[in-house]
Image (cartoon, rainbow, N blue to C red; front, side, top):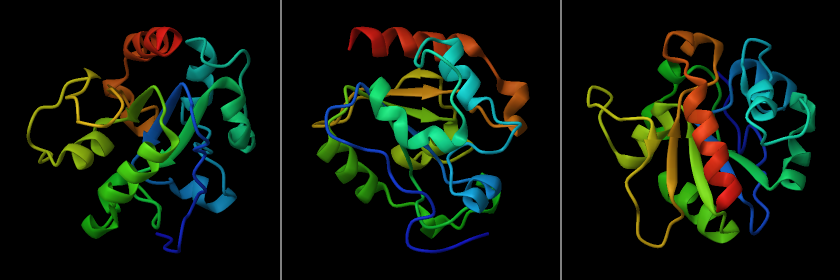
Length: 171
């Protein structure tokens, strides 16, 4: 597991259509300094498949996402690795909220339930549904998505990403 100031830079310019937030940079992403770099991760293909990008981007293209109205961040910025191996103190919800309020996107999506649970302070044993999340005052609407990680295959359901893309298009 890597620790440093920020493993991956935020992609959070002002007035995005949507920001997608993961839990933390994966091992491969941290090694190459690019979001969703593990070849087993569906992220870049899904963005194209649901119409959020016109073509399939590569992990190295992550800095160009604002051209499509999209931004990226993680709820744990100073560590990397699998969700199960992240230390509890690595999650910085107040800093995440401040970053989102500063860039003012129309909607925020969590790529997987782990990041959403951390954000909402929900114990992992408690149920959390995909789809629209509980509204937070002075914060954009939230959407919880199935993780695109290869290890999350048994929970995969593209329909939630399609619904998210529809919401992004009208926000």
